[in-house]
Length: 247
Image (cartoon, rainbow, N blue to C red; front, side):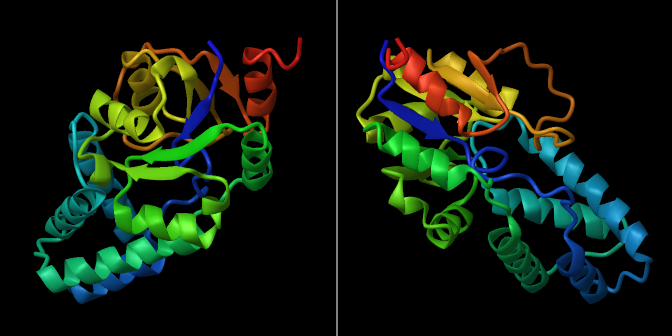
C-alpha cells in the first residue's frame, strides 16, 4: 500500500542521543543542595544507578510522565546518601535538567534536508514521542521543525506511551491516515518497532553506532522492523520504492 505519511520518534531518531547523558552541573548542584559531600564520580555513579532503576520500573507502564520518572530517580539518588528531597529541590533540578535537554539535545545533521525532501513528495509528517509537552514543544520551536511537520504528539497529550497501542491510534486519528498508509520511524525495538507492529504499521529502525536506547534495559524484544537505516535520508529511497517512484 502506498505510503502517505511518516510518524517519527524524537530522541534517537530526529535527534541523536548525546554520547554522555550525565546531568553535569544540574546534578552536582542538586547534590550540593541536598548536602551530599562526595566526589563527582561517586555522585555520577549513584545517579546512574538511581536513574537506571527508575527507568526499569517505568519501562512497562502504559502511561507515565517523564517528570515523574526523573523525580523518582532523584529521590532514589538522595536516599542512597540518606538524604530526602523537598519539592523545591525537585522542581529546581527538573527545570535545570529540562533546560539542558532543550539546549543541548543534538538534532541529526540531515534532519531538515530529509524532512524537506519527504515533505516535497506531499507526505504527512509528524512526531510521536514519549516525552512530556514541556520538552517536545520547545524542541520543535527551537529547531523550526514546524516548517515540515503537520503535527507533533506527546505521550502526555495522548495519555498513552509507546509501545502501548493508544498513542499510535491517537496519532493516526490526528493524521487521518490508516495503519497501512503510515510508516513509523524510530530507534527503539521495544517502543517504536514493537508498538508499530502491534497496530499493523510498517516501521523503519534507525541506529547509531555506540548508542543504546534508554528505557529498554533487561527487555527481550523479538519485533523486527521492515527497514533498517542509519540516516534519515535513506527514508527517501524507501518511500519512493514503496510508492513506485523508482520503477
